[in-house]
Image 1 (spheres, one colour):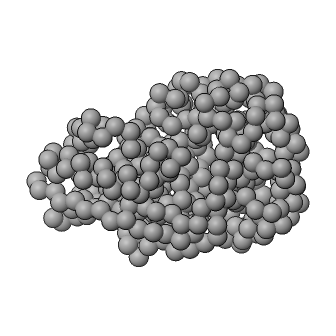
Image 2 (cartoon, one colour):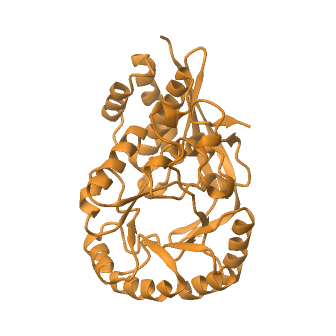
Length: 345
């Protein structure tokens, strides 16, 4: 079999500037990958994060070597071999490797005539509902964004914190939307003792859990917070690869995985099963990204407890369609085409 490959860089404007404790983003740069077998085309994309050492430039720099592996192997179904050889060819660079992994999985599922979740043998009825993320802003503006999310059908709100106005933000949103479920993400902004105080403060507003309250490398700090805070604690920046799962077990209650951190759909499934084996709940998150990559993440929904798969919704316009998400529900049962469901609009 002969495979041809290509990639292109796309610049995606956000609907609103998106601020977290580390800074503000107004544009997302993704790199879209295509793998063509002459009859079907698999689509994937990288949504790199400089926080993890990747940019669109680094993705473009390594993709020729990664795609050369795909063309040399020549069989999209040889996922294990391609995965191994890509890891040997390019160390780290998980978003770049993930773009290729997604495109391969899209292609092989299309060749089988099945949506990816069915190719994996998963149950579309076992799905989850995604949160809608509110970036940091003044409290009233965040309450307005919450109103917009609710109008779009999202009752699960993920609220970014990490300011000196954190309690005011949660109080304002909670008072404006008392029936919404709120999850908090501090993106490493607090010290352990500060985190305990902050979690105690927001717990009064029916917050479900708190994500990454302290810096990623401070596992003792995470454990300190978990042992003293009244809410469950999730790890995101502390949980990047498979090796991190046993390290965070016992320090948190929830492992938040991202395809762009772990580098491969097969690796994501391994991380999910490892997290379960260590007694952790599992959440799948995303970067700000197009459905060219986000659609693949949706097919893991039957394996999850929680989802934050709203990256495409934060864009002013996504050039790709993906898996239907009415009112935030990852509706795999409504997907009417094979592969991941990603397709150019």
